[in-house]
Amino acid sequence: MSRYAKMHDRDRAHIRSLWAVIAVLAALAGALSWGWAQAPKHLVLRYPPELRQGAVVGVEEVPEALLYSFAYYVFQQLNRWDSNGSEDYGKNIYRLQAYFTDRYRAELLADLEVRGAGGELAGRTRALSEAPGEGWRPGRVEALGEGSWVVYLDVRIEEHVSSLRVKRPRIRYPLRVVLHDVDPERNPWGLALDGYAGAPKRLAQEDGEAPPAAPSEEGTR
Image 1 (cartoon, rainbow, N blue to C red):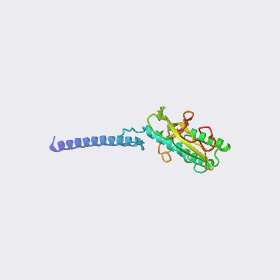
Image 2: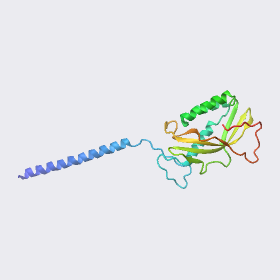
Image 3: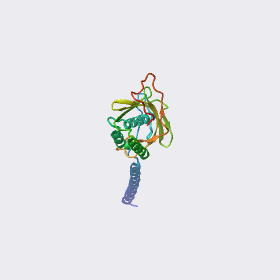
Image 4: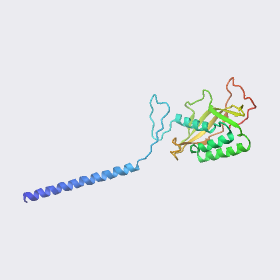
C-alpha cells in the first residue's frame, strides 16, 4: 500500500472518531436540555422567623412558626372591622379570599348572611389581638399530615357598638391550615385557612380585667 493510501485511511478513521465524539456530545446536550425543561420553574423556600442560630430548610417544608404567623395574620385581618361590621366583614372576606379554601369561604359567607340578618354587625367594630403572653411557642401547631395542620391561637377580641364596649373575651381558636399553592400571584404563602378544626373555646378572663361596660354577648364567633 502506498504512503498516500495509508495517510488517507488514517484521516478517514480520525474523521469517523470525531463524528462519534460529536454524536455523543449531541446526545448529552439533548439529555441536559430535556432535564432542564423538566426541572421545576419555581421552588418555594419558607424560612422560619428566627435565623440567628441558623436553619436547615427543605424545599416545600413549612416551619411551624411560619404556619402560626400566617394563621394569625390572616385571621386578625379577617376580624378587623374599623368602622362598621356590616360592611367591613364582607369586604374582608372578599379581600382575603385567596387565603381561604373554597369551603371556608362558603362558611364565612354563610356566617355573614346569618349575622347580618340578625343585626349583629350593624355599627359594630372589632379588633383581634394575641392574648397577653400567649404568642408563638412550640406546641401551638399540630401536624395532621398530607399538608394540613391545626394552629391554636389564643386571642382577645374587643368589640364596640357606638363607642360602647360590648365584648372582650379571650378565646382559643383551633384553625386548620392547608397547603394551597393555587395562585402564587395573589397568595405567595402557598397556604390557606380551611376553617375550624374544632369548636373555639372561651378562656379564663385575665386577673384584674374589668368586665365590659354593657352586658357581654355570649359566643365565640
